[in-house]
Image 1: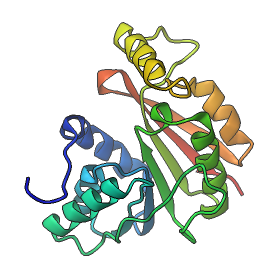
Image 2: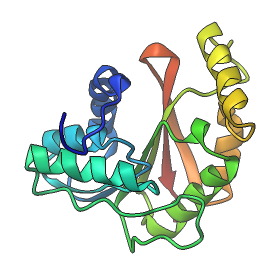
Image 3: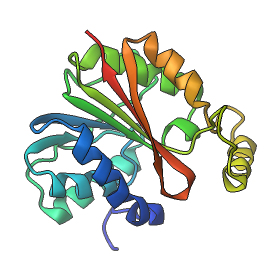
Image 4: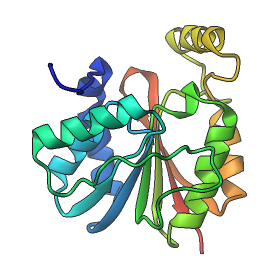
Length: 201
């Protein structure tokens, strides 16, 4: 590709299983905010499949935002806004509201403060009953961790000691303090999970 579009090979493998879950989670209309949109390939796929929704991508990295906007332009999607400069860990988000929030593969490659900030931001933005959707690899106290995920966890910590797979129970506990209740945990391909929360009134 000669423009700003980036490619993440895992996206093509996981986008359809994720979309299948999102069809059961997202509202039929409204605005979906994606936090840490990365290359932009996910949101373009979802927005094309769910055209009744408005989509707001975001990423704190300028090159990622350029990739997102380039993918949107390439796909000619009228229901996707320009990528927003949003840092999940910040107390101030440049978004005033959302009817759903997605976060795919961020929690394990960012400091815990980013997850805390994301949950706090979701509490502020989401109306009662609205979903917060997480996807990625996690640790679970009652389920043996796949060797590949243990190796991945060690490689992440070697890159940055603040990174690593999070325990689902720790995320659920923190979410509860932000009035976000766990709805369900869904097994996904390649030892990943979809974790769905709902904003409580």
